[in-house]
Image (tube, rainbow, N blue to C red; front, side):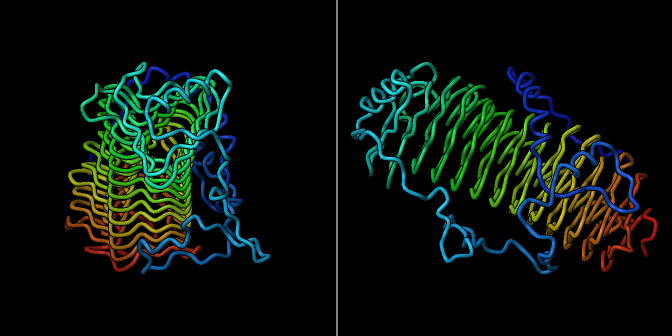
Length: 469
């Protein structure tokens, strides 16, 4: 039986250059979770991912594993900082904003202030509260001058930068080579372009930091509805929502370095990777949510097209796509998930409700929950055609319209399970392998570590050694 996954090779003019620049750095910079396990041989790609994820993600090994009844839960992490053990709170990025030059509620004044800041090698600009800076003129493809120096834009309550609906199409902001833009407490909206990055475009050699801000309702016919990143982009305590891309990355697309922390990526739309798309370089997502995004082809929540993805303490929920509703990992890409929650994602016509893995990829999932995901065909929870390691993870309540309610392992797949529980999953097909369906690949349960496959319908396993029924 053949269940091919979609191969995607987008046309990215700068991708090859960015990919070669950041690939080695991405692999070297990964931290957390060792993949090596007693008694299991894994492919070199999977081994590379595992070794590079050190347990130094800041989470001790003695933490409780997710329970069978775990679901989305509520985040106790709302940017209020953590106790340092001395009764003091770490304010994180909510500390005092640097004081800057006031900019009155006037679009021409903002344009002039940015132009002057570029000429003077940077500035901190304090925008007016309760103000919408309405952009009407196209300045080299954007509504504001290209950022060419270190510039901070401080907003406040209800401070918005918006493209006027009747204006020509253009993005809101461009960060050029040598530019370093920081946004604090701002709303960026209304960008529309046929080029990449309708909200913000970050060129190679540029940097963007988004703090406590909202990037919303921007539309591109290309990639990166909210943000297109070829440089270094950090999104912290922010929301990227309701953006649209014609190709990949409805919320954010990146070919270089992308870091998302304590942020919400929601209700974005794209052909591939509606929430976040990474094509080369490194995508690191932690303490965040990727929810209710919709892809027209595959990868409703997260698309790791190439390079390295690292996901920690993140909820990927209620995303939809014809194939790979939650996450899609393409050939040769690597992904590590730790303390992740994949819940309620849907592959409406194809495989991989929660997670889809293409050939020659490598994925490690540790201390995570894969629950209540649905696939119209195979692999309600996980569809894998590559190297997959599951450790201390629960696969529960997933459903496949065909085979492999919990896990479908293709002929090219090598799946190793350690201390993992697969139960109460459903496959509609009579011989479907409610828990695990192995289509000629290799599945190692490692039952001595505590792996169990029970209470699945219509049966627990098909073609899996050491699995009862």
